[in-house]
Amino acid sequence: QVQLVESGGGLVQPGGSLRLSCAASGIRFSIYTMGWYRQAPGNERELVARITSGSFTNYADSVKGRFTISRDNAKNTVFLQMNSLKPEDTAVYYCNAQSPFSSAFSYWGQGTQVTVSS
Image (tube, rainbow, N blue to C red; front, side):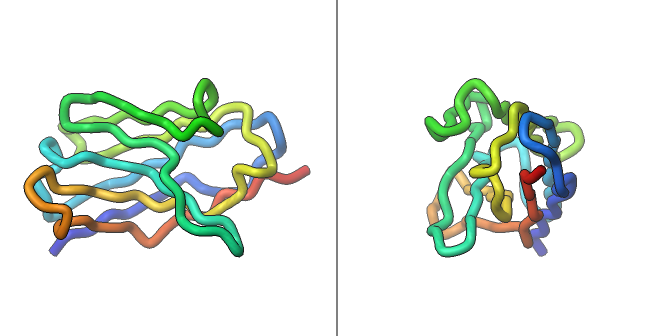
């Protein structure tokens, strides 16, 4: 059974930082592309950042220079370090695991709320 468990969300003031974690089980973590997505009320889910098995990364333009995605294959965990947070970063953040063999094998976590507000 595949499980992705996010943690680290919360309430933070504008300009602050948060670090999200996603612990994976039930998959061969090291070969999966891991991603962070977010969905704000009334909006579609959007890609925030993604890291391949070879640690190549890509980011949404809106977070470049502020967010950093990383992975620890020994701990089956992917991280999202979020700095200089803005109110428009407020959303539910979801972890995703994408198999390199088939797009049908895509798994999601339950999401963690990030709220940026003074």
